[in-house]
Image (cartoon, rainbow, N blue to C red; front, side, top):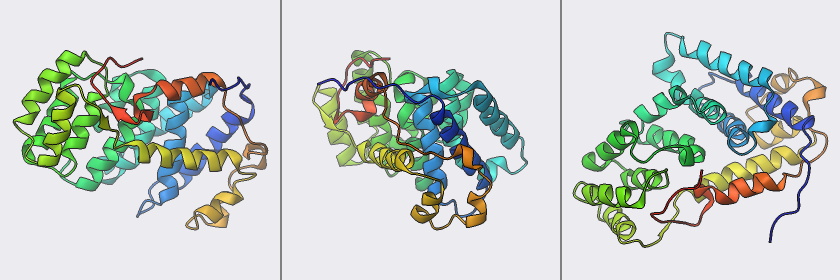
Length: 277
């Protein structure tokens, strides 16, 4: 059954997006990175993917300017690149400019398992925009399998959801099977190669994002965030003016619901088939 169509409040939502981004910028650079910081970045990314019409050009310019300037910092590649990553990928979703995902693609085989996982999480929502035969994706994922990295099989499953002919994917999977040292990874890849369904291991990530989005859209004011995420100090919330606070819940328009339903990341299973774009 289709969801009834509701008009998005295109006055309030852009203000919420701006508020989330300003809170994210204000807390940028904290170590360790607070959980709320990641969720705010993914909030922006989620709307960049499923409701790009809600971004005012002034906000897109503000986001891209911050990203450009941050990448010029002398210590960017040491400890800033991964905090910026979800925002860069949001810019990719808004612009289709592949330069915004260069760092993500280059770090899919990072030696640190936690950073590998975060890079993968950051790319999940744009998987339907990526191509399976992109050498900048294939090479690091093949490396993961050859080196026996933790989660290597999941990076291969991730790429199988990208654009590309099933036959091409099947041929590549057969090559990967010769490199996958983990028997569990081999089992999942063999099922895909034989046209079977494999449970989607990424659903719990996007459900977690969706829970934060629901809480944020239902919140009456930013003060609620300081209750949800205690690491935010009261003086940090005071920098956002009252006019940027959400006063009423927003109901998503059916077109956005359809985009979500068609997205491979929201499917319960992965199978080799053409990806809708």
